[in-house]
Image (cartoon, rainbow, N blue to C red):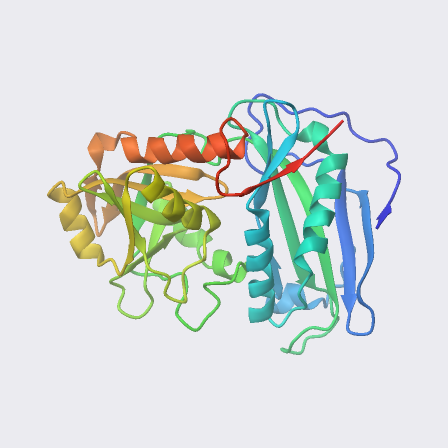
Length: 355
């Protein structure tokens, strides 16, 4: 790997409230792929614009995938990566679905570690803040043909971030879409590709005008079964002790935080299950008090309590729109492991030592 010298690097400056995805570090990683050479020209260089041909496939048929993970500042000043092996496995599954070349997971993790180590001063020391890591692969092949690409660019950039929601760890409002859908089984719903998100932003803007922060998507066939929220998987608590989440159906993203909660739950005294969740039954359970909490889970937000749902013009409030004890328990346990404030009995943490 080549490390290019930096000319006139910006001074490290992370404000008390960095927002989410608004600030970027001085460096990024890039490498290229062709069938003849495989992945080549791996280098860490100055962060900046990418040279891209106007006919690049990514611009015309959306041939791209990405991942999202974080580096966390430990109390001793070193850094933690959380379950990054799972991110690399998911990225390779996404690549396979879109006909892209895979990257050796150990090599990919090494590239991320090298970049983060060089940019470690950008990892916030502020409570609740971290360094977001975004690996991306795009097709740079210059063609208008709708076919598998042959030339690719892999790049990684870093962003100091605060809480995903400006309101922090407080209940959010979610509107259930009955008109539009996110993905269908057999499509690309399980892949982390921008096409899955591009079709959702207009709907998200519509629900913001209704006073809601996120959209909950239903299945594409019957418009009946709960799938996921725009930026998170969704979970519910029944009778204060049983955590349920939609079963993976072929159109739901395999969330790493989701997977972690399903592992943590029984160790924290809860029962867990993956089920087919009927939206009408779910809302009826909220009204009758059988569902006592709801929350989203994901890398960006970690755990985000849901205070109310909107559906077909009616509101359904949960726990008086307050954060529930299960969401709080899971959030505290997960973040304590991620930030190194508690032991990691699962082998989820990969530590980066910095000078």
